[in-house]
Length: 440
Image 1 (tube, rainbow, N blue to C red):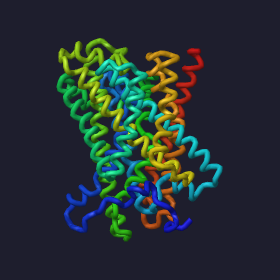
Image 2: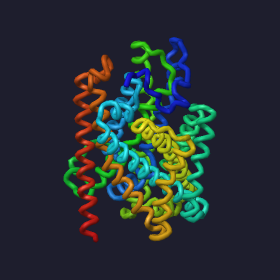
Image 3: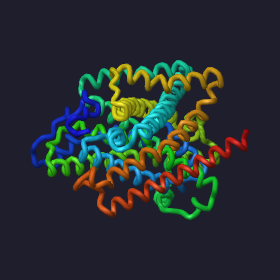
Image 4: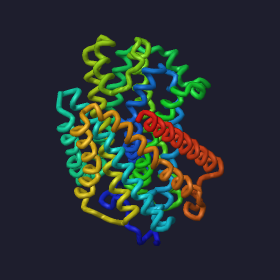
């Protein structure tokens, strides 16, 4: 299909944000800033909290090096998304549709929809848990209340894509401020934190530490973010010249790198607060979000600590559900060229998450939510390879990318990252399923 014949991704906001034709670096940076923050919420969503809390409580600051490594991998992969979207005018789903046969595309679409539903499930439960902790709302009602953000997304997208970006940036900033306060309350050891970012052989030698480390890696890179980012970079109305495309790639990469650096701070902060509040005070078995909430205020002696933790969890869950719903629209339009009304598409995405959440809570009790969140991360791990490998393959294809193709050093590094992520997630899945088999 010729590029001119293809309908754009997210047509209602495609090329809707003008880029000023000025030399000022900061004015251009401001115009391009936004998509990276929508992507960054996937790297600090409730699915990551459990692994970060467990890692900090069990092993102190030792796994900070894993958070740093996984974030560097994420920065690389998201930069490839910018490159693909700007250079080709395609998002990742559209590129798959153009270059794979229909059967392969159908399988990829089904896997991606399952992954988005799984991701949305973790975020929905995280928001519902936050409402229960903060206001005592039962989880069943919390799940239903958090589903209403679909209406917020529809309203904001009708106003313009900048409004969605502004809301997500406010929510991300809220999480950041909350954890900055938690770090001050917990008074962590600065020397211990710095040493935590240094690689340690012990991580590979200790099976339990390795398991949590791979869990952190597996929960960090979200497959739907790769589809999302390659689409929303196209909301910017850059000029279709070689020079302006390189400029869009440069500023888009800076935007995502800065935003993911904030995600690095937040993920690190969750682990640091857990280590300082639980590990060094003798509470090394804390692994549940609810337990962390209940223990923070008593252990730190700050009455507001638990409430701030709950507010951060709510902001994290709500920002993540907004972006997962957008990703669902991109995937359906890209793979199937099926354009449902936005309200119907988002309602379908949300129902895929609400139904299993309500079934688990009603039939297995509220204590089942933690297991459901873990299960959702396993499902995400299963799908990850099917998004990372095509992304690296397409951006390394000169016929598709032209002069924007990955240079040799970037191609080699990208394939190395893809192999590491796929290998570690395969190991995590093997261990998880083995554990389930032996426990049953």
